[in-house]
Image (tube, rainbow, N blue to C red; front, side, top):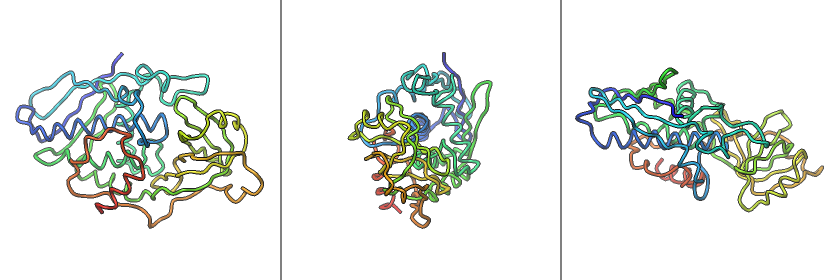
Length: 302
């Protein structure tokens, strides 16, 4: 089963189109869909190391139609639960991370909508996702004025270059990640994606990604217990934590009470994205860069 969408770019003509515009548009759609899918599955849109095989399959967007006039493409995408059932279908470990029938393109559209509305606590936005949306600026120019993405029989999102400033604002207000310790109840563990949920003292359910050097058997043995986890904490534009990259975890002791709180991002340590041409940043597959590399590169360009 496939779902059909229309991608419409106003201001350009399909029969006299700069290949640079087509390249940037295709990169935005594939990169954005891949990052949106990874964010749903793992709680992060980028990660260190090689991207998992299922990620490439999840963002396999096919063009099935191209019409004259302003650039209008029909594209299709398959449900994530069909493309990667071990990741996106419901299992004994818990509910599916996305509703049945939902595609990576649906997730991208929802991320765009959340960003347009300035939802600073959205689960569909992290720094990597906002980075991709800011790069959409390169689609405009050379005549292009408005991008609209529609699901046949469903909703649509649209924006112009002016709305990219909203994405820019959210990205620039996102606090830099920092190493921290957190105490909470280890509420769940998904072995296939090495993801966890920590229930913090204020009721927040914080996603965690278990590092490759951490024994999953050890983590499984801590399920339901109060633990102290250490690693890099990433934040939302609201300064609330979004996830923790767990490099060490163990049962909490009375002396760990100092870490029994919800960490907050520090204002004044945000990094702004570059505002000049961003086309050279396309072409990297989601997951090739880690958070530290992204922030370091942006700091050099700021």
